[in-house]
Image (cartoon, rainbow, N blue to C red; front, top):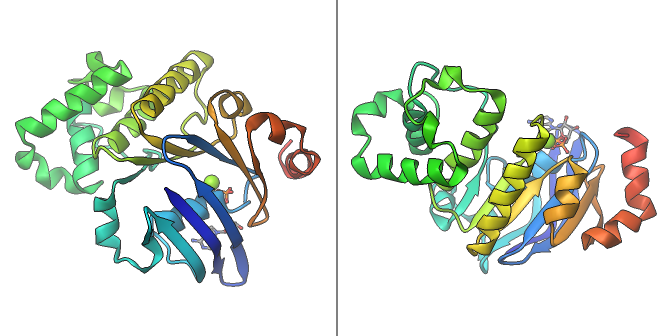
Length: 243
Ligand SMILES: Nc1ncnc2c1ncn2[C@@H]1O[C@H](COP(=O)(O)OP(=O)(O)O)[C@@H](O)[C@H]1O
Ligand SMILES: [Mg+2]
């Protein structure tokens, strides 16, 4: 479904993504792991075209994403989480869900344009995430964990086929972690393809069909969770910088 061929991205001398190649299969959950600074987020930014790649190819459903204008990519069915750090605290959870989807922060000017359909969609997603009770609460009163769920919710608003999640479980407690795992597995069972960056190895090993390991900009291993767990090079990458 998503194929990365020899992709490279540098920032003023730093090669953040260095000749990466791998493939994500439709209907699977794949995890991208690796120490801090490995280039994981940059790779996601290249896939969602926040950054153009310097060389290589990014192919989604047989189309060259890297050659496509950014505004077309949004309509292809790729959803991407942006860890919600800024929210409109004085607005409700429902309003935040709809507005983040519509145009990100600053889009409160669009508030009068929220349709019944948007509200209904937001309602369905909150129900799926088990946070319907929060619908009318001020965003500012939510806990960190609740905001993490909302983060997933904003991605789902656009009904993406391929879901990119950057550290969906970072900083959450065990109960919420189990909750998130259950939601991700449900989404996969609904036919979604999930590609996530995650440091929590329990989550990665439990839900991934495929694990891709990145270190210093390069893909150093790819395989099923059990294979990856045995891989010495992978353990080195972690123990070296991130133990
Ligand atoms: N916009 C940017 N400008 C300059 N350097 C960047 C930028 N984004 C990322 N980098 C650098 O690219 C490298 C990889 O970073 P990142 O992709 O965030 O790693 P990870 O997500 O694996 O922790 C780091 O050295 C980081 O400093
Ligand atoms: Mg990162």
